[in-house]
Length: 158
Image (cartoon, rainbow, N blue to C red):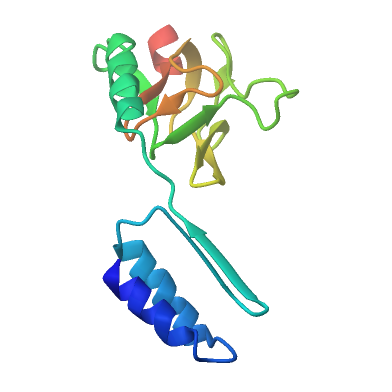
């Protein structure tokens, strides 16, 4: 915090603020314990804030996740999440889900969308078969390597 204040005091003597000075303020703010910073000098205004992470949310997610941990017996085929994020069963809320129990899935088909860091990631199947079980609902948080779908191979159904 001391570094941020020193930089801000030094800027009050300057008529215009340079990009490098703004970057320095941002860096020092990020490394400080401050949660918000508002700076106004003439026509120049900047407001910085940090998002506080509520650790209790992660504990709740972990507890809920442990309750719904799917029991999979190998060698059943599964489609797993390649990343952490929010699970979406369809491209839009109005759209039909990509997969439901009983749906046929082919290698390369989109099976769901996982939103991570505001980016929508289409998850593709690496197996072919019929969906036997769907483990997550729209809006659920999924972790890396979580089982999303249990699939029965065509070879197992004959």
